[in-house]
Length: 254
Image (cartoon, rainbow, N blue to C red):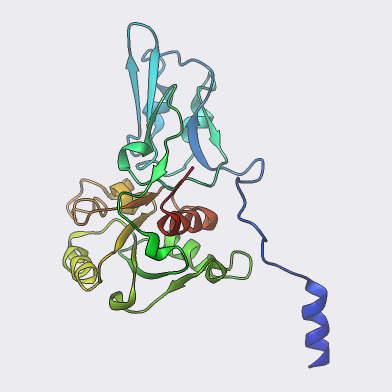
């Protein structure tokens, strides 16, 4: 027993005192539009290599605009590696949660949007209860599980995972939501008391990702339920998931 206690004391504190604002240098995150101008449709290397059609290149009278849908991006980094001009670069920021699906579609010259939850959620500022529904995405589930380990320690922020939707404030959905999960997901949502928040975690839950427009009708949560918070990534980093949940508690921030 004393040896175990001595070992635990020698390891120190594993928990990060504050959420990391960004990924370490060299770690691949989501892409972002860089400062270098795009060659235009004559190149289209980024668009051609994107496996989920998350990139569009629009030619205007004054300039070439890149349109990047982070809600469809799986973070494969093929666009950042393939862009010859550096018009699309790696984004190491972790505060990626947004409250409007349209805010995940960014264009050249766009400013970072203000994140504001549409409903009055002051009741959640002290603590929040979360019911998780996985519809087929093990990667996001693993990152969500990591949120509760000693490094991230989800519960210190007042965030608690519950077993029943009847006790939940937030319905957190992972996976592409295939047709077989449409009815169970609706039932889970209807069992929750008002006010309730729906949170789509991961590219699959936001848009279906690589599964979209298939025979299983796996096009994410939006066609089934009204979504209040979107956390992009495939999978999102644990701090990005915590960021989304803290956004549900605070209501608005940048």
